[in-house]
Length: 463
Image (cartoon, rainbow, N blue to C red; front, side, top):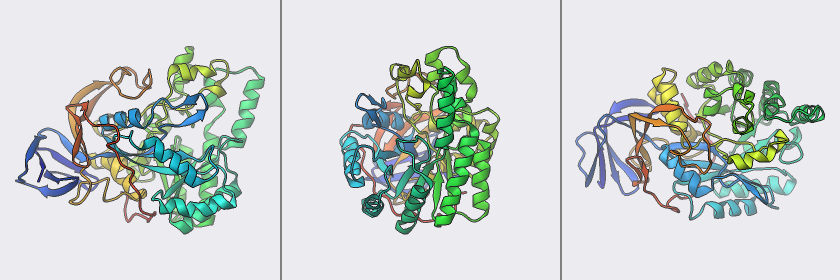
């Protein structure tokens, strides 16, 4: 074996136990005791876990000719690696491209030669005309086995019910999983128009025009359409108790319905919008917005109960200067937060250390469950013999202040500025290569690969 990791505690979605990991080439060769290898890595006092999978990122997102998310595939994946994530599934937008294959080719070109970790795509559909519905099969053949549909952003990317139903039916036949952004775009537009008419333009009105009821209704509707289509469905970035309840009821009916939340909804709340400082409040503008704090308990409970299966980030960062485009009109503030680097440590500190999650819950939510749902398991998301040697040696005692100067994302603020977490990756390996050593990035641009994924198959167990 080329590398043996000794002395650590192995954390898998299935359990926690002391074990050594042997690596040969790009693969895990053995899990056991008294392994022999060329390079021995001492992990005493540390946790050894599968590299994280962030199934919700927006690296390289363009919102127009002069506005793009501040992380491309190089800077964003460097940040991911330093935070213990070794695979991202990025959203590939159809916007601006006549065909899905043309769009996918363009997104492949954005990532190739730049990504430092492995990657795949979800294909976002904005124009489900008959040709596009037919073309979904060619996308699945490329190893992109998930699609995204939005019920918000009317006139830009929003699908109506009939369009979503057609996408769901086609995805069912292709064994693909449809990810749905669930907010009622019609209601939001009416509330936005009323605020503008009243001269209410501050960032706080972003949250007030995207209320919980808009998410709850759209979640119920998306689940109903998936039930009618007989298709699996994955609701992204769930923020509130009412949406959790809708998902739980669908699961109780026997639907193949899954959900995701994000650290910001578990840890931040709507009070940040009360700041009189534009830069502070605008920094938290994202969709759906942050909610009333009482929703957080329902989200944490949903994670441990298995109602919500994954924690992604919706990583879509912008700088303060970019956010300032909306200084006089909250609807012009680019939506999004940075988060790809802090996801794994935040869930360890506020989940595991504070008793909300077990160690195995932590790994299931950040690695194993995304791998199972999105056709990557057991190549990714676990450390079984034959799996890719994507792993993290995590120091549970290391303390880190989450400020923009320490983090690697290309933005000039952190939504968790000044927060201290205990627990941070010490070493990170991607397919047997060190990309982070002693907390420092040592990988290279282009070291990541596109990973084709298998068609969707209902996982035997996600709990």
